[in-house]
Image (tube, rainbow, N blue to C red; front, side):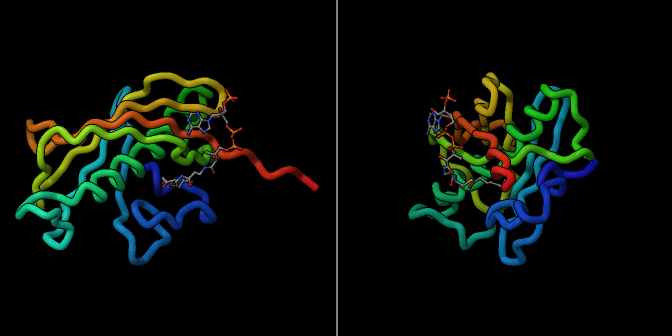
Length: 153
Ligand SMILES: CCCCCCCC(=O)SCCNC(=O)CCNC(=O)[C@H](O)C(C)(C)COP(=O)(O)OP(=O)(O)OC[C@H]1O[C@@H](n2cnc3c(N)ncnc32)[C@H](O)[C@@H]1OP(=O)(O)O
């Protein structure tokens, strides 16, 4: 199965966190998994927060940001009855609230999941969770918005 990010149009594939066309980026890969989405990521030691073996909060935000917008695109497509191969809507983050519940470890596989909360036209609300094993480390609530097509001249 292709990752959601690998279905982005070339002009929207430059994201530092997940863009396949960003050579220096993190290349997060998100997948549809039944009625949710899932991604895995292992952070290198350089992404430390102030405390040893604790992942920097900005990286947690980045993982939720990229996984959330990928999830929103996939959920919009599902609602419209379109298969991803026909192209994905392009969603960006309008709002992202994060609760940091427990420290997330470095050099350990993290699991990020997304669940659809609701859709209202171009607006998609996604609930996000980040786990290390069984431990819930962070939750997020995202409002993603589908970009409008540029007006035809
Ligand atoms: C393409 C995929 C690449 C991967 C992306 C990875 C994730 C990212 O890092 S994205 C980068 C960070 N995000 C951004 O830079 C977004 C910056 N913001 C914008 O570009 C614009 O504000 C944008 C596109 C979100 C919305 O603008 P625009 O298309 O003009 O819509 P606009 O008319 O303002 O709002 C649409 C609706 O959303 C609502 N809305 C907009 N922003 C918010 C917000 N922050 N909170 C609540 N509601 C909002 C509006 O009230 C409106 O609602 P309604 O239709 O009911 O009246």
